[in-house]
Amino acid sequence: MLAVVHYNHGHPTLTCNNGVLHVCIPSTETQLAEYWYVPDQTLHQPRQTECHVTGNEGWCADGENLFAACLIPDGPELAHASKQAYEHLIQLSHTLGYINIYRIWNYIGSINAPNSNGLERYRDFCLGRAEAFETLNYAPASLPAATGIGLQEGGVVVFLIARKTPQATNIENPLQVPAYQYPQRYGPKAPSFARATAIETQTGLYLYVSGTASIRNHVSLCQNLNQQICITIENIQTLLEETQKKFLDFTHVYCDSLKIYVRHAQDTEAVADAFQNAFCVKPEHSPTLISDICRKELSLEVEGVFRFQHDPIL
Image 1 (cartoon, rainbow, N blue to C red):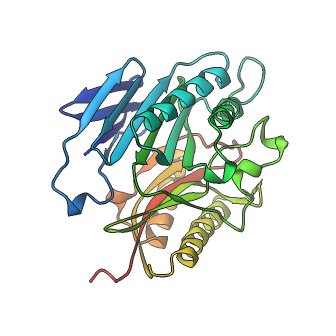
Image 2: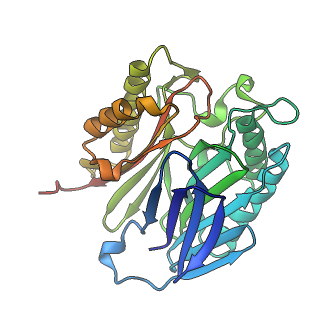
């Protein structure tokens, strides 16, 4: 095990305990612990891990897999601090030899509120993130899958997972404009992520689906909750179909886990039931968190990990 992410009361923290990185993310509504194992752990004896925390940055690695995180303090604007933190975290991953970053999470305090200049804080964060990727010479099509979701308050918590091998394959949704091509109406810089990223290991093909919502082309569809549920499910199903087109040998797909974000607590049961039924995943593998969504008109967002295999599980 590389890391445990704790969603609980309190302030963001990073600690190292018994060779495991612990990340605390403030959550007033939901108490949850998320355990991060490597995708192909079942084929190996548990690897010895190396864990370090220095200031607002920490990481844990086992020689093939890396989990790294940073805390970005709150401020009147987020772009500059986000750019610096992103550059440093990605450079750290590369320096350690984990050059294939395939999934990033971003938890942003008061995500829909304006910054000191009136720019929405999510768009402010996206500006800094995009500038970091540009400085590091990332091609837009090589950006990893990601989630950008709200915290009740505070700055930004970022964590990522990376491997030394193999190289990841990004998957886009033909029903949506790639996020990095969004028009400027969504902010001074477009969001920097792929709709999903796939990695092939000895135990199968794993698809990491980014935070997905009710968006067609680049427009939010949000007439009612049921529409948002249906469009989001269709978007995820489309990503699964696109993955199977690229990896024809993997004919069977299973949902290992979902993480469901809901803006309004009263919608939790309806949203959770819909996604658990749609993707045949148990409640213990599909927790729901009460969170603000990156677009203020949206009520839900869902991410997931799907496993593709050559043969069915009997």
